[in-house]
Image 1: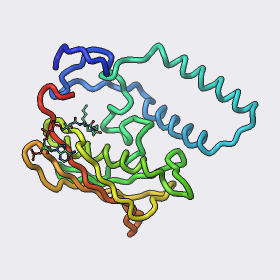
Image 2: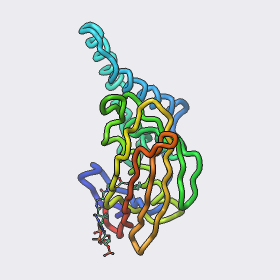
Image 3: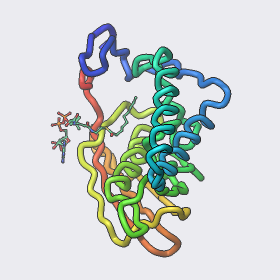
Length: 209
Ligand SMILES: CCCCCCCCCC(=O)SCCNC(=O)CCNC(=O)[C@H](O)C(C)(C)COP(=O)(O)OP(=O)(O)OC[C@H]1O[C@@H](n2cnc3c(N)ncnc32)[C@H](O)[C@@H]1OP(=O)(O)O
């Protein structure tokens, strides 16, 4: 894929099967993303008056304008590429704090917050597959395995998933057959099973995006 132009990435796509240098974040970058998450939570909860809406809109627009000249392409961006930082530096993802991981199992702690609220104290049903997909993908692509993408992700909602509580998540490899990697996961609130999942990841062939 080296040198091919991708309309979707808006530029030249490096060969992502080969190891490449990871961008190095400046000091304070994870804290900036954490501030962004706090903002997401506060905006979700807020019922401001019109004057405050105008003030916040001005402030956020000014910050967005300041950041705009620093934009880089996908392959150089920091958000989502910081493997060692909880949530990978992505404000999109529910933050999973990895407690242990090897090539077959991953255990972590996750806390859905107000930003992820669906209703009546429960996390939005779309945020749970988002969280599962990210850590299943992390495990599926661990141990020097070639890159694989999610072919399907089946999630069972067994009980509501509360926000603002530390929950446990556990993912494990079920089996590998040729290019196919089957993984399973569980999300628990104490002894209560909130959700479980099965995901099939398929190893990409050369040239597959
Ligand atoms: C920077 C590095 C980033 C690393 C990635 C991290 C992963 C993050 C996880 C993601 O979110 S990826 C984004 C969401 N996923 C996608 O966008 C994937 C879109 N789909 C595809 O690209 C292709 O469909 C896919 C690569 C998954 C499979 O297409 P192929 O043409 O390579 O599969 P093929 O038809 O050759 O099937 C290979 C095997 O998988 C099986 N298979 C494929 N899709 C299936 C499916 N949906 N259900 C059941 N089986 C499936 C298929 O039957 C077959 O089984 P057998 O070998 O036993 O015959």
